[in-house]
Length: 401
Image 1 (cartoon, rainbow, N blue to C red):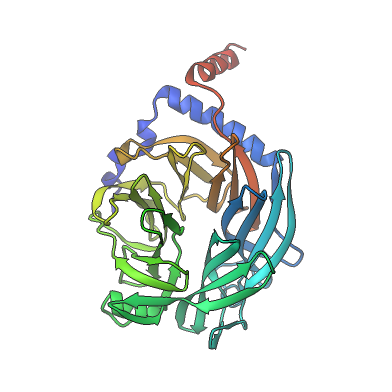
Image 2 (cartoon, rainbow, N blue to C red):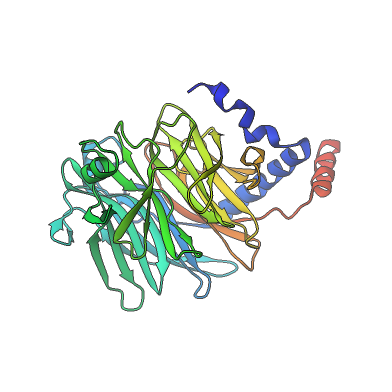
């Protein structure tokens, strides 16, 4: 896939001089805020923290974060890392000035039971949804050394109890375990045994009452566009479709879904070494409306909605894994999307939640160098408080001084 495929659709070119100045100014404000207003989730004995997801309950002023933890090794290519990575839930509280970590709970690790089997190896790819005072964490685990599967842990916030279940695949009226060989065989029509992860952000469609996600068959030559699944209970996932993307697609894992204003938006990272992603828009029946390439995409992207509910944004984690672009998605014409700020020193796996009655957003992200991943932070950023004219006057003043 050559650079020429996406040069004309690069949203950096959509920024005017004024937009760029505004973005630079926003970036400085947000970086400064993150440096002063954050909490590190690392605990004693942790050697690695990675792959974070977050939900916020504004009524109780609580933040819930799941992420991967490893106390044995720090390298993502190490057998010790693969075997010993587990899923931790962090419970935090916040007010206008402070954020405090209150507790943490291990949701899934090697040796834990899950239905009629045992988690054979390390866990991965956690996602988090809150419903009816319960947290649902969907994650990847290994049933045996070669069979990756999807599971869910339900954590009840009322009585602090949890239960784990295997995820199931509903395909053509038949239910199977949602694991790598079944996904490849029943959906892809081939017999392979590689990793699986429901690793796009889970999105809710209030118009039909279903939750949607994307599963990918990683390190495989099949299902390179991912597979769209939907659920009501986070245990049984019904096959919906393979996304009808027409651009050259070599995705291996890590997509993000958002249902916004009657349409689905899909950001799908491509396999390395290609530092590019695909951004697509589908209607409510999953018919393709528009697609384009995402430049400089090095990790999982994340959608979030602005505090007034009228704007869709994408956090694009850059290929160097030390910066993240905040992109205003142009929902009428995707290629007109533009960068509103770039936050530095964010490694990857960022998620965001914009507070409805505030100028601030909470972010959770992996910080540190790309390898090892040193830990996960939760921090706050602010919206742009300055219009173009004020930004211009501040820039002119800076140069005249």
